[in-house]
Image 1 (cartoon, rainbow, N blue to C red):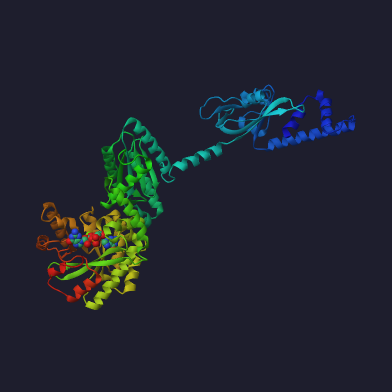
Image 2: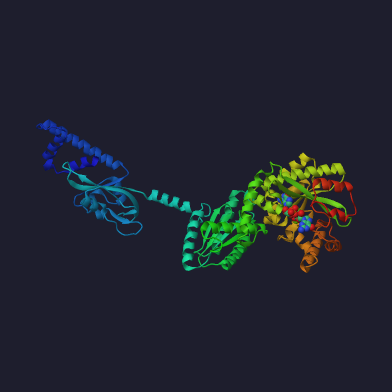
Length: 618
Ligand code: C2E
Ligand code: MG
Ligand code: MG
C-alpha cells in the first residue's frame, strides 16, 4: 500500500490536477475542488510520501522499484547497502546493472524477475539459491519476491523487488544439514550418512559384481578411561583415534562414528575379505601405539568385526549387524583381534541381547551365587586360600558360566553393581569360615577393569571390609595383567591405595598381557598367577614349560608368591613343584565348590592333600 502511494507522488506535476481529481473521485468526492481542498489533499499526499519514505528506509528488507521499462527509479537504504549502489547512481540504470543475480548452485546468471513481472503482470518469487552479486563483487544469498506496480487505472507502471540477505539462515541450514549427517565430536559421518553410502556402494557393487567390506570397531577399554579420567580425556582420545583411523584409509573409504566408542568403516567397492583383514591389522597396530592425552600416555586396543557383501548381508542394516556380531565374537576371543562374520554367530548375538536384559534384574532376583576353588600350598599340600568364582543361575537359561556373561556385564557397566555384590558376599563368607573352622587364610576375588578404575573403588573395598569385619590382609584382589597395563601409571596409583588398606594384590592370567618388567617391579603386588594356558601346555609345548619356569623364577626373585592356575594332572604338578612354584589351583585338587562344600572341606581339615576331594562340585 505504501508503494502505491509513492507511485502516485512520482507522477509528473503537470498531471497534478488529473491526479487530484482522480484521488477526489476515489474519495467519493465528485464535487468541484476548491483551492482549500486542493491544498489539503496536496498536504496529505506530501505527508503520505514522507511517511512512506521513512517506513521504507527503516525496514531491513531491500526495496528496488523500476519503471515499466525496467529502469530503476527507487532504492531504499537497505537496497543501497546490499547492492553497493546509491540511489542517485542507480537512478535510471537498467535493473540488470544494479540487481545482478546468479544461481548459486549452477553459477549461471538468473533471469531478472523484473522482466518476468513486466511480461506476466503477476507477482514472482525469486528462484531458490539466488545470489546477488554486489557492486564490489561480493556474493550475498538472497530471498524474496517481485511484484507489479499498478496505477489508479490498474495499468502496469513498474515493478517492485523486495529482497533480503539469507546468508546467515543459509549457513545455519547448511550447518544443521551437516550435523544431521556428521558426528559432532569427531566430524566423521554418522550412521545416517554411512547407511546412505553403504546403500550406494551396494547398488554399484551389484552392478559391477564386486564385493565390499564393512568393519565394526569397538575400543576395548574406553569405558574405564572415560569413567576414571573424565569425559574430556575420553573425548580427546576419541579424536586421536579418529585421526589415526582416517590416516589408515583412502579417501574413497568411509570412516564413521556410531556414538560412544564404536566406529564403522566402509571399504570402497572392490575390497574383499582379504583387504579388510589387512586393514584391520593396520588399524590394530596403529591404535595400540600410546595416545598422549593431557600429557598422559593412554593405551587402548580395539576389537573388530568384519562383514563382506554379498555373503554377509544384502543391505546396509544387515551388513552392519553382521559386522557388529563378529565384533562381539572378537571381544569374547580376548579382545584386540578381528573376526569375520560367520552365520552361526547370529545365534550368539541373540544370546548376548538376552543375557544383557536378564543380567539387569539378576541381582535383585538373587540369581547370583559364588563358588570357591581352593588354592593349595604345593609344599605342604594344605589349602592356602580360595578364589571366589561367580555363577549365575537363571530360571530359564540354567547355570550361565562367567565367560558367557562377564564380558557383557563389563560392556554394559553392570559389572560394577555385580562386582560389589561379589566382594561383599565373598568377604562375609570368608569371615564366617574363619570363625567357624578357625582356619585363617585369604579369599581371592576377581576385579574387572571397570571396577578397578572406578573413582570410588578403594573406598568401596574399605567400606565392605569394615561392614563384614574381615581383616584386610585376608582379602586378595585378582586383577588381570591386561587391566593393569592398560594404564600402568593410573594402575600403580590405585594399587598403592589398595596396598595402604592392607589388602593383598594378585596379577591374574599372568603371561597373556604385555607387562614390562619395570612396571612389574613398580606395582606393589604380592602374587603372580600364571595363566592356565601355559600350565596346560607344560608337557606338550617346550615354550610353555620355559615360560612357566621363567615366571616362577622371576616371581621368586621379586619375592612374589607364584600361583599356577589350571593344574589338572600329576605331570604338571611335578613340573611346578620341581621349579619351586609355591601354590597351585586346578581341577587336580578340586573343582570350584559351593560354600557348604568348601566349609565341609575346611572342617575336615584334610592334609596332606587327598585326591578324593577332586570330586567336588559338578
Ligand atoms: P580366572 O580368574 O582366571 O579364574 C579361573 C578360571 O579357571 C575359573 O573359571 C575356574 O573355574 C577355571 N579353572 C580352575 N581350575 C581349572 C582347571 O584345572 N582347568 C580348567 N580348564 N579350568 C580351571 P570360571 O569360574 O569359569 O571363571 C572364568 C573367568 O571369569 C575367571 O578367570 C575370571 O576372569 C572371571 N570371573 C569369575 N568370577 C568373577 C567375578 O566374580 N568377577 C569378575 N570380574 N570376573 C570373574
Ligand atoms: Mg582369577
Ligand atoms: Mg586366571
